[in-house]
Image (cartoon, rainbow, N blue to C red):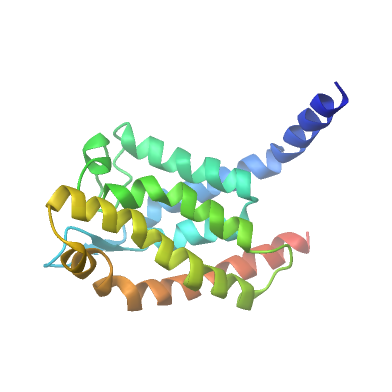
Length: 189
């Protein structure tokens, strides 16, 4: 019985007004950043600023809240709000060639959040974002691209991975800078 009360207290401490506001701001950041996107002619994937917002979310929120916030973003888009890259929404996006990215994001962000550590550190954030976040993001997208487009591994990587690597590394580093500044600001309050 004591552990149930302790678990309830921990959950209550996790879902504070401050944390709920942070989650809402992170979801809003994801929604707005998704509109900053452009297509590449040889792939159904879009280059998007959303990956910056997702990484910032993972590096600012605790792991449980990260998963909930990113899953809420995906759910909002899945029910039809036009908040996915390209200004679209709906279940069709989740079952299309890029659907694996959307489905994988809550899990990728959870892993990033778990690996970020407790100290505010640009180096740690950058390492986690580049070494864990970028490659893990490609896994879901590659699988869905191969399955839906009926292509092999090399063709799938040519459409879902290779063209995006340089930009995604730069976006991961930018997200680490933003997250470090936000976390330092929040720590000084």
